[in-house]
Image (cartoon, rainbow, N blue to C red):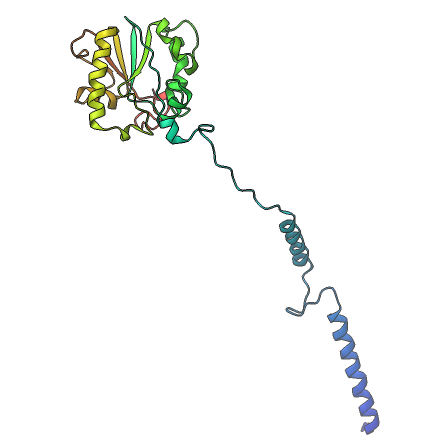
Amino acid sequence: MCMFVCPGSRLKLNAITDKRMQNQEDSLRYSPYFTKKSGVYDEAKETNGLKDEGKSAGKSPKKPRRPVKRFGEMSEEDVLKLKLPEHLDYNLDILFVGINPGLMAAYKGHHYAGANNHFCGYWPCLYESGLVPERLTYLDDVRCPSYGIGLTNMVERTTRGSADLSRQEMRDGKDGLIRKVELYKPLIVCFNGKVIYELFSGSKCTVGQQKDPIPGTNTVVYVMPSTSGRTQTYPRASDK
């Protein structure tokens, strides 16, 4: 049996088909799951994107950090001009000798006051060892001579580090230290670190009591590990 469709009916059928296809495209185009780029709308991505935009919009700009003032209103150049007082007396039991004042010690006006210097944490050891009858801090350094303990340096000039000292300053410091020991006559001179004593004596040494006294005196020489936090051999306070 042969089916026959007249021309008018064929045109009507094509029009209906085109309209249905257009309706389907419109439904997809206006659907919340349709995008021009991929044809499918990703609701999760869009939601996250809105959240991210909200976060970035809500963030306040970072404030510039203020420079840290280590020395209050003083400049480092001003601190370098400061002198650290030494604490001496006659017939001391022990005279501790450092190489020269650091910036923080000079700024605070007290020996071994820097947070990176383990002597700052070592002050309680003076009490625990029986050298003093009470616990002390760097603020009590002026009272040390009353307990038979003195504090001085080979070189009095304040520097950022010992590397800033000249050889002439070290030679002059050695002569000055010998004169102090001859005058005040301490029983023991304790050098705070091997480097200091090696500069003083001109020879290598080990930690502990040294065989030779201070030249021209009977004062015993002892070398302790440096309390500087930069010391690699004894990096922690507990190692010392």
